[in-house]
Image (cartoon, rainbow, N blue to C red; front, side):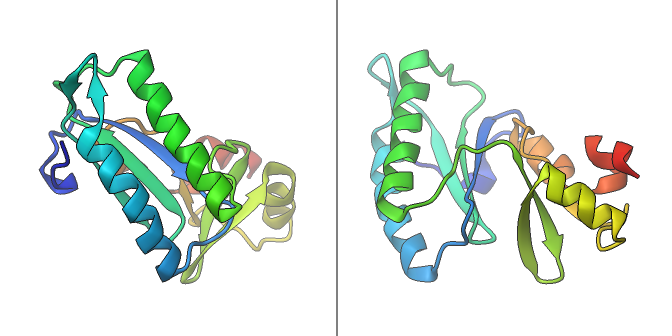
Length: 159
């Protein structure tokens, strides 16, 4: 069952999917039309899951499940299948964990780690640059540890 994202308990489980291309507003509406029915019917062994999603910065799809609902392997597989469907429909990659996303002014930039290190060497990226820590896994850590300066992330070792 779909519930408002901001009403999820802090320890609710999240999965962040980062797109290699920004979505247009029209694509976001189409993605919502795919995700919303899925969330409404998402179940674990026949029991409805209290779940939600948000799309941030036209690039990140974040799916969440209430902390009290234990998600089974089959439930996770169903959500991954949904993400794969979105990838195919829009020609994007949502599962590449090897790219670094960071803020570049008002936009979100995405680069390989090698290119990211080159940008650091050229001083185009500083310790204050905001990066997206996509390994956060709860609603609480999404709020506090997702968008952080590089100096607070594992990438600080490149300075």
